[in-house]
Image 1 (tube, each protein chain N blue to C red):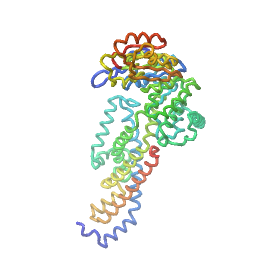
Image 2: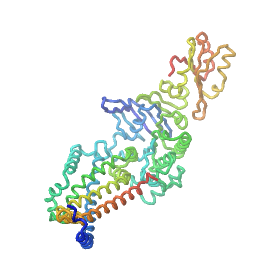
Image 3: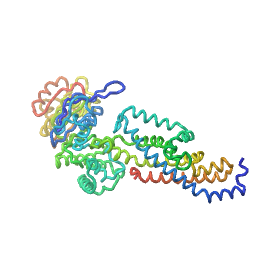
Length: 233
Length: 334
């Protein structure tokens, strides 16, 4: 199976791909990852905060049925394998983007898959906040909204940066998987060359670039997280 | 200033209802420093949290400056809380904000921001003796410094009441002393009514005018610190005032009886009672324990004596003739 990996033709093909296709694929991958992460954070962050603030003993208690419903929906979305979810949200993609293929259309399943995951990560960040600090803010006459904006989110900032980083690297990986439904980017190159045409060398190249991107995002995220944490000085 | 009337608080737990406070009545006058003391689990923290409604009382009412705290709606309560500042054992500063921003925090909550808020926060940091720590983060400060920042923060909204929940329990003795002096100073300068929750007798002795002793969710006794310390009436009071730990281990021979002398003022404290009793009456007493304490500038003392049973009544009579002291037989060490 792998006996044609390092042939001269394979090297030539890889270099050609590196020159003609990879730059645009990197752009597509970055674009879809950043857009999807941003949209997923936009929905996941408030949801994660509500999961803690909305509890019976939280700062902004919500009706019990609503909390049950939120938790149930998140669990359902988290249980569907991404490969299936991609296909399940086709109608939604068609509704929102007008098509089910292409880079833009894959943002829909990526966001749908990532926001419940992000909500759970952020729920964890919110639970780590010292409840005494929240009590102190209450004793000063802070409203629930003020506690969320001025205490919970700022105090959890390093954790939130960490969660956003984890989310971003996960979405990057998932975006590669969306190559299978014509999602574009590095994932599609890896699948087209490696899976459909057995050009493994080019597949390895695409995978190597994905690894580099994940490494870069993770290092940058960790650096920001540590730098922003004023408890460590 | 603060009136606590018939306050009870019951918690629901897995084992059923737990009564944390029961029929607590305390009046706190404006401008005074009042101590609420008790062992852990006596209900002190619950009591102080009922004053600003962080805990809702099950029964009874709390009036602060004439306002029935329990009857306020959410917005009214938030506004009232700005007049009732609170400091905590673990300081509870915002760890991701620098000191200036921490002090500014209550002002931001009240809708004041920008330069005005910053100036006010700077003034307060000066007041608590930390003018150079404005840009430092709490993690860079010592415990005493963090509590100073917390005090500055508490004063930002110009409150009438300062609630101190075990505010010095995490600090070493010398820092405790400094923080207590600061609180006393603030009380004198700004006329703020201070409620001090503590398990440390020394804290009450050092700064409080009045004290309420809490035992098992009830007020065992209350009054002027000097009076309560001189002659505690309740068992809980005696346990706190006469830390009788060594008493229990002293073995007194079977024929002996014990009595406790409590001096009411410093003149009596300086009289050589035990020696004169030996010389004049020929009654030889064993000193089981003795202590003196300084409260509000005066010295108070107590002595626990062991006496031969045959001479007990005579000794009692002799000692009582001195006046300004109380003599009582102690049958069991509390």
